[in-house]
Length: 312
Length: 119
Image 1: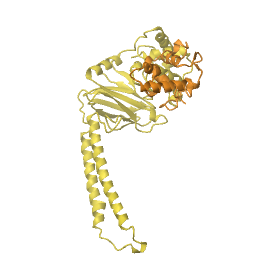
Image 2: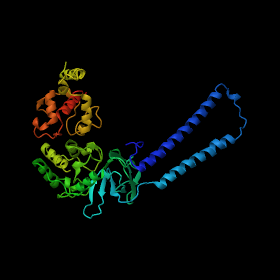
Image 3: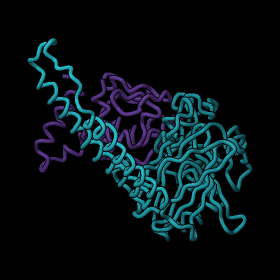
Image 4: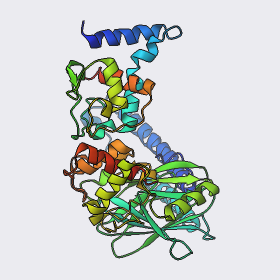
């Protein structure tokens, strides 16, 4: 998650500007330090009365206080403006399009398919094809959030009641971590996401799988788990396509088992962390909308988690 | 010497003789164990002193675990039982919420070695 390791055209443009700004600032800082040290050293032995207070020519002040700073700042400003005009570099031809809605504190990710009925929701994870432009339309359901995947794009705000848009093209396969970059409440730090850039064939497989309904339970424990999920409190907030669970408050869980993280990047995703999240969400991420559910026995809890982890 | 000290000593000695010893596989590597603990997210359920983001309150705290006499109240706290517990908790305590994460034997030994270092 480093701005110095760009993986898209857009991020590379920003990194180039960043380096130029750092170099220019470092040179100016070094010059100012040298002048200060020289001035201090020269007057080290002079007593207070010996300081020469006769006016100096103002020409140095004009050059170093006005002309040079104006030239440097205007040059940097023009460089940034030029980059902004070319940004985002990705064209709009056949982009991968998502609608992302930020919530306190997770990301709803909606895939917009050209074929009606193939549109789906997932959460906290965006898949893109390497070399194909991605277009992400962003909004917020509550407060202002900022979408930032440093290796892929520059920060962009998500604003309640409005939409913004970001485009980027991932150049190498990889898993790129992103983070909400606008303080949005108690769990702002636990509002991460991942962007998975994969080869076109793998990406097409992912889309096809995600658009499908939920997988059938594979064993009796998972079958028990599904019954508990669909008839229990989970279904009030969560949707699992292909079952009776159709809540619309929390993330869509249709393929939750295939995701890399739980709770918007707060936990790795496996049967153990799933159990922890179900029973103990309020101690892991205090204030989150998910309650700590204390109604399952050990066997039931394992069954629920086994079912959810089987949703791949 | 406590059992854990013996285990740590054994791990150290085994490390010296890495080539010859099947003891390496028996003892486990606490450093690797710590990485595995963080990768699996054990800290979502357990308080694990020193591990990253490990303040879960679902299961017991693992503070000074080597001093604990029983595992899950069912089996004496030995290396072999702890490895078995990590790999297949239901085989020791049916009905426990602790899941089988499909951890292999070598990794379970690393995790056990790490858990025995906790203070």
